[in-house]
Length: 153
Image (cartoon, rainbow, N blue to C red; front, side, top):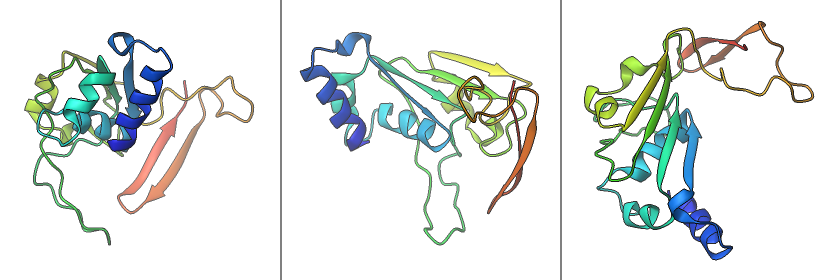
């Protein structure tokens, strides 16, 4: 979150209008956007100086108090309310960061919430870039949370 504030400050000093600047993040980065815009963080006031709002895409937004068993044990914190507008984007076929892990309050407090039932993790990857995934092709990725299907459209 402090890096996000520093990036916003840098952009503002280069003439970028904070009133027209939005931050975005995917997965864990989406959680970072939600948390940075939550009113109780140490940097929320800084974020509001440099960003008009945020766009978290398939964020990792576990309910507050959810505990993880990874080596770097941590607990998720409250997300929202958001003093700045949030456009939340989620997918119904998401297995890495399922929207069902989000609290109802986290979803309800977003200014807008777009949910696409057929979308999954990384649905928005650029398939026209060199060495990019191929449209219609699916892959399986395995991590500590299980196997996850990625399809590109």
